[in-house]
Image 1: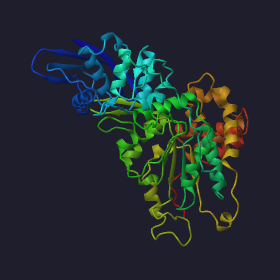
Image 2: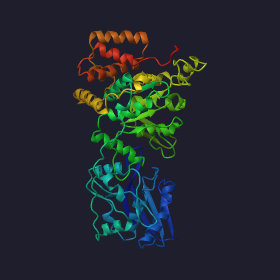
Image 3: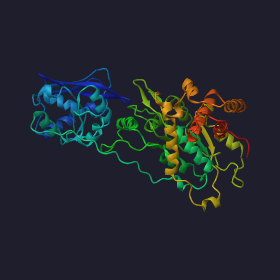
Length: 503
């Protein structure tokens, strides 16, 4: 007999439908899985055997062949346990073959017959909805799948519950979405003493989605500023929540059926490898830059990262996506993140601080800063100095709260919103080419200042356009339709050359 159902395979966050076929034939007892199955899939036959025993069933003494089609697509993961078992039960005559043919199933089986959580339920549910098919997933991930809008979802806790449902002796209710948790943070800009210029740069970065580099001695507050940036960023739209949650679902990071409702803040250690940062590994998993999609990637001690790792960021910073190419796979992940980087001015960290400089200053600073390539620096919109905080500033009260700054940021975003109504993006930092020229209306004096500064600072075309984007954001914060000379001047003040020979 032949049993057939469906499941999915993943190429990045792209979902591919996989047919699961099981045929029981005469011959010596055997259990074979074909169709480029990896080790985890091949081991599923032992989990299936034990799970069937737990519910009072046993494998027939015959030749069992499982085919996962298309056969030339690599199948990875433990979520194939459930579809193989369902197709096997249909082939054994326990389930009617017709009742499981229009379902996409995924779930890992426990030896006691329980159905355990797997990765990728949310994108699988969205794909099933587009195929006009139902989805069977683990119970704890039912609320996650329900966000897809697919009304044909069941989430059993165990294999016996699934069998009873399809036999009509038990009715499993469709899972319901759980309320999104309110974004909460105890970090506030009011905690930061002094650093008014850096706070202003953070406000501009939040309003326009700009990348930012902070340079300053140890203890000046760079990490504090970076960790508080999410507190002044606008709340996520439902589309952003689903896009970000799709990536985290594929990575297996969604817990208890909850979507990601807080903007990601990823801060990998400087010892992180290139695959850890951009994605890759045996199964080409999403890396830190994809997990930071829609949020912030904070790279502290920027020059301490491996040179090749930093250079791998150049393409994602421009395109908003990353391609992971291996001998047997080529996968593209979204990676529209906001880069926030921090570094000391030199290896000892105290360049320009009298009494603290090392004996090799300023040469040590030139060597230290040279670890960051010019092309990477060119892709960072805002370069700011974060000097040490004076003792008298530490004794004063905090400045503006995050709520006050966030209100100004939201006001600037609302002011710019009509400009992006018919465009595929909604941030000044993403505007390029003809679109940039269209949205940046500069006064003649402002344009003259920008051209003269570009010649004096020897800015590249990319650097020239990034000044335009930052000036446009500054104008939005000032509720100005045109970009004025003062807006360009402030944007230029945040575009200082990194390498310095002064002490």
